[in-house]
Length: 356
Image (cartoon, rainbow, N blue to C red; front, side, top):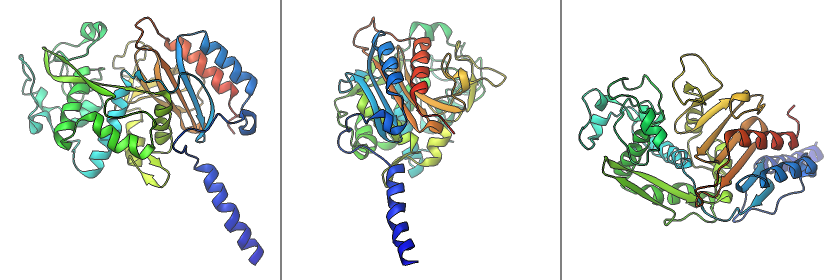
């Protein structure tokens, strides 16, 4: 009996350590993929395919172990709309503290904008509506693309909460609401609440700023970040907001924010009445099966932070897998399509261990 007890005391911590692998101050060199059940040959094929694209950096993390990486993983690139998923994490922290209330309306918070200002109905949009891109406020916004401007619904065409539209106004105003409530700008907050506890190697207070436009008093915020730091962020979410023994983001928030709260069409980004294989949570894209990316067989759900032209942080819980893919957005010609990313992710999944 004593021998059995000693054996259990030795084995259980080892199993827990293996299940709770995190990087230290730096990521270790990629592990031997074969030891972890990966196919080195198929990973090489995925890498060769990626290097023929405009890929700038890739990180593949399985069970907290760096399986493979290539490209310039230590170079900071503009993260584009990945900024929104980072802000979602900050919201989760502050909602958990009670600093921000999801039920507060724009009227409660004193939110206005340049003429033409908000209508009485628009002022009833809640913080949670903005997080789901369902505010119903279609005021011009800073940082809108030509596609966004062209596709923006008519003012007053939808009530708050009833219609999903990928709306920069919502995302920018969430920045204003956050900074007012917390009394701190977004980038210093990211350093304090995310980068510091995760021991991000590169991200600091100089890695972000704002775009201002005359059409709106709410600027678009931006960040630049490395693949190796985004891999830590993806791992944080894979672990449901926990980093080692610290709950950085509430687990319930991670689950809720990455759930498919709005069913949408990934091709048109318009609201769909019936269920689809792609959806949106709180500033995260969520999906399942082959609707997540073209040609990808997930066999379950996954979610991603996505930035225009090929910036991805992909989390696949059933595989204990995080994949980060970046392009060089400093170069306006660099671009990796959804189809190309789907092919690359399929190749990575083919190299991964079989799911029981």
